[in-house]
Length: 385
Length: 96
Image (cartoon, rainbow over all chains, first blue to last red; front, side):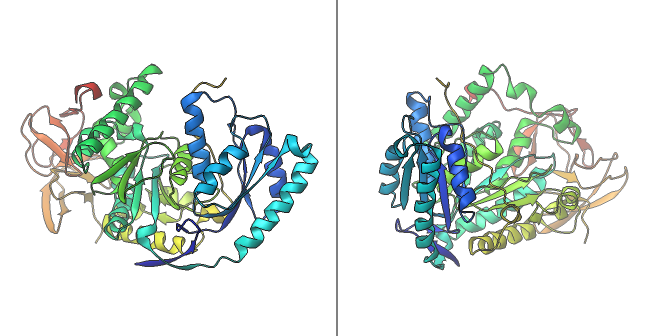
């Protein structure tokens, strides 16, 4: 099955043709924003990182930042650095060039301040934009798609409507050779034994248990016993009985196929099919991690509703109930609440989501894109020094 | 046809109510490609589960085709299935 995408030098296929202005450190964030205001066709992000990371976290941040900047939805990147930060444009450029990404950089200290850096940045970004404009969509196979899944602001019925419907779409994409990322490790707790059984190998199974244990240990370290407190009183009042039931409703959004690989946050998968990314349940941090892992598209299920999008990857929003759909119509692309209303089936809504995935991959705008939602955050894993 | 309750997997022994269901009501559910009828022994609130068959004490309660817990007492067909008669059996992560 085919769709229309942008072929990159790396050989990868993008579903958008963005030019990104990316600060490598928080101190360059406002300059990145100023450059983008001069050239509104580009996208930009701001974040609080790039300095003060120790050892493992430095590697983790580098992987997340370069991973994000090398997403095939991006035609080219302008990196904005300060000069004395830990993660410099030079460091990132080495990695980005390896991935074949078109990249330029400006350094604020080297260029002599805000005004000069903005001027040079605008010059460079116009050049990248010009090159990007010559890239045309071409036919690509959907086996080249990586779709990230997320559920945020869930309600007690998400596990019966939006999540299993998304699961049907994911099964369909995987059957056709594509890749799906399931993440939110804390949400998997209670089903790790089930996921382990679905693992393609003993090693992958062991990794699933390991990431679940580590996530639980991090939660315990904050003084919370997730197994003693979940499902929450609100969940129980809504009809959810056990932790297993709640977590099964969450993992169902990835579908029912075997687990091919477990990757770290922002790591690139080496397999196709269903992949688990070890990441937090935080909506924006999870989305950005999957995009840094190479996901060109996110499908996001929600029961309470959220406007969240992403700077470079379209986010298809699926509501789990019709009440939400009716009250946040400008944010919700597909209503799976019709399953609970008794008018549609999990299967038929799943097919609708699958169809939307292909349409959006070929260029159809999601509502989050139309509204300009571009939320961005990276998972911090260590103390800041 | 408008459905009153939903069964996710054909091996499930519970269904979830999609709206308020009354005691004595006969509910038709789709289990895989088959239709089954269950007469409710009590009223079921939207979002809550009821048994599609008798479940003995200690037997698995199945939803999504997986065990979501064990029955702590005998549950009869048509009865509400919740924390009063089911207990999660998910042990600690370190006991897996």
